[in-house]
Length: 80
Image 1 (cartoon, rainbow, N blue to C red):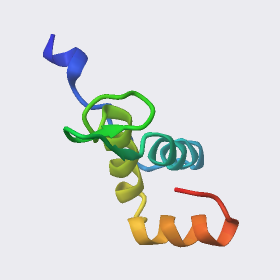
Image 2: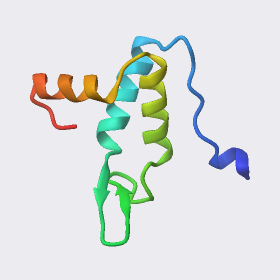
Image 3: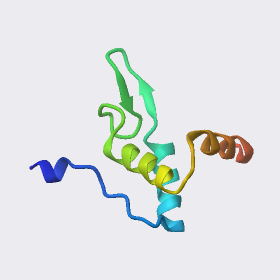
């Protein structure tokens, strides 16, 4: 059962396709404040969910920071 709940693997080297999926995962699976805690906006489970963790780990493996993602979002006019 623990294998089912384990995090998704981060494959290296990070491909362009993995990078695009990771950016989308981070944007879609963002934290949302609820009265009792932060929940994933998409899945309504405790944040960070598995896809958010995978997305952040993949971006880190690619050498990108959260600040770079925020800057890119601001430049393209898309919300994080």
